[in-house]
Image 1 (tube, rainbow, N blue to C red):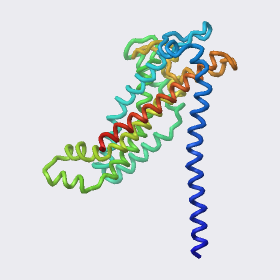
Image 2 (tube, rainbow, N blue to C red):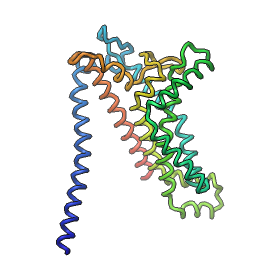
Image 3 (cartoon, rainbow, N blue to C red):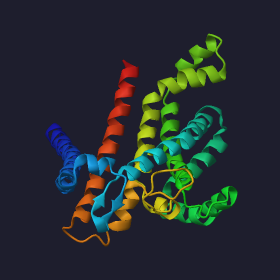
Image 4 (cartoon, rainbow, N blue to C red):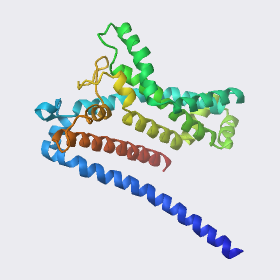
Length: 288
């Protein structure tokens, strides 16, 4: 019996180990593919010209992606500025204040929000948000960076709420009870103790939100205007992701244009890795 049990344990250990190794293999495979596919164009164009150039014109072989980089950074930061406070407040309400029935309904709505396809967000934004911005600010077109920021903020909200709520629920009650016993108010306890104790989970929610914002393409291409301008709040813009989506279909195989689009993918991948590393370092320093 013991021999059979140990054999089953060894089998499951091997399955779990294989699953973990496959995950690592996929990450390494994507990394190697992007590096191999993305570096030739950068070598031909020049690193400084590629990253700092302000003109994207494939017809004249001008491949400067600084407008795309700044647009992606501004759009992501703007979405976090809108979505993060709202997400944390919602998570605190669900975890610490909401009645059980209300919490169940809101959590179900948040989960449903996370399951909506990105093209639906883009469609709603194109039909409702873009005309509203156009009329409110007297613009020739409402497809602007502002519209993209609002759509991204709504899209990252369920990730921030879900992960942050789980992290806040896991905070030991003794921490909060000790704070209350010392005379702290609800706000002081929940913001000073609970949020601080759940900071690792909250940081994870930020990483997921940033990854979603940086990697989104379909919804953004419908509301941002998709024009290679330097970013301005009320101008049509193009993100790193939308540059790839909008031009990959007609970029000739083996051309510098197509290779430059792979290089944009490499830059985007490096951005996401850098954000993950930076946030993990911040959390570890605060934990030390």
